[in-house]
Image (cartoon, rainbow, N blue to C red):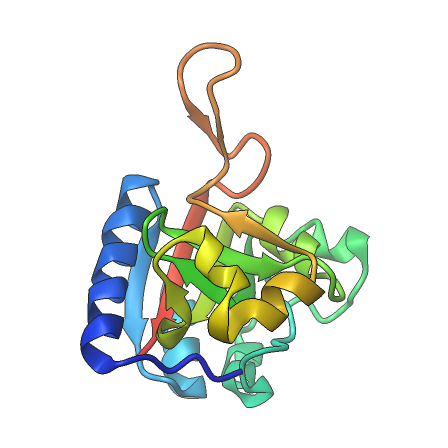
Amino acid sequence: MSCMTAASQSEGLIQQFETSARRSAATTQRISRSPSAIAEAVFGLVPQRARLAISDPVDLAPDLFTESWKHPGVIRERTRSALSTADAGLTEGFAAVARSGSICVRADRGFIGYVSLLPRLHIAVVDSSCIVERPRDLFGGRLAVHGLEHNFVFITGPSATADMGPLVRGVHGPHRLHVLLLI
């Protein structure tokens, strides 16, 4: 998928997304668009002894995750049981929303739900040119096809709840969300 925007508009949206993501307790990192850059970032976040689940990319080039498969803790068995033991999950996000710091992750492909929700750390790779200003912008223009043809979820920061008093993170999903922005 190509989401190219004007360079100055893109930089402004990237900065706004990063600020909003920090407000929601997520972390971001800008990296180059290469398998080695993604793997270097993943290896820096996921200790060698940790178990890593990887969801195959659909919208990004499939080869972008090839180097990440070399992590010694990669879970190769694609079952719910095996994926439930993951410490970290690597997925793609097909878009991001600048105002909220949210990422958009498909919920209709393979094991992406397990990979994005079960581990304590969710690492999402997002093409920075696919950042839109508002959620409604997903349903018009370049991203309309994805917003209307696929089931997806907005993920804004790590899982959190205040149902029983003070804010607690990681009760219903990952304790941490780290977004790798492909520049």
